Length: 220
Image (tube, rainbow, N blue to C red):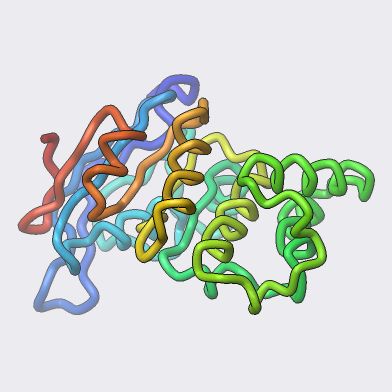
C-alpha cells in the first residue's frame, strides 16, 4: 500500500493473551492520511491492544502489520514507527516521569537529536498550543488530573508525529480541559484514531467511526 496515502494497514490480525481466548480475530483496518477516526467498544474488546500492536508493543500471532508502506515485524522496524506515530496512554502517569513539565516535553525532541535552542522553542510552542503557557517549571506530579492529561498530550505533540493514537484522552476531565483537547484536535491536520466512551467529544473531533465487537472491527 502507498505510504503517502495509507499510514496504517492491518491485515487479518489475530491476537490473544492466552490460547483459549482471542482478543482480535482476523481484524482488517486501514487508516488513510488525513482521516480522523473514532474507535468504540466495550472494555476488554481489544481497542487498546490494537494500538499496542500498531506501535509494536504487542506482537500478533497472525496477520500483517503494515505501517507507512512497510511490513513491520521486528523491534528495529518499530523504532521508526514510534518516531512517526504518537501514542497517548490511557493513564497520564505512564507517560510523565520527569520532575518538571518542560523536562517531560523536552524528552522526546532531545531523543530525536534536536538542538537545545530548538527544544526550547518546541517547549514554548507546545505549551501555547495546549493552553498551558508558563507551566515550564511546574512540578509534574503536583498538577491536576486535567493538567497532567494536557501535558501528556504535549509530550506526544512535541515529537511532531504524523499520526496520533489517543487512548481515552478526555476520561475524567472537567469541561474546561475537555474543551482544550477539543480545540487542539479540531485544528490538527494530523491523522488520528481516538478511543473514547465520550460520544459528544468524538462527534466534535472525528468524522468516521468504527466499533469493536466479538473480536472484530466494523465501520459504523
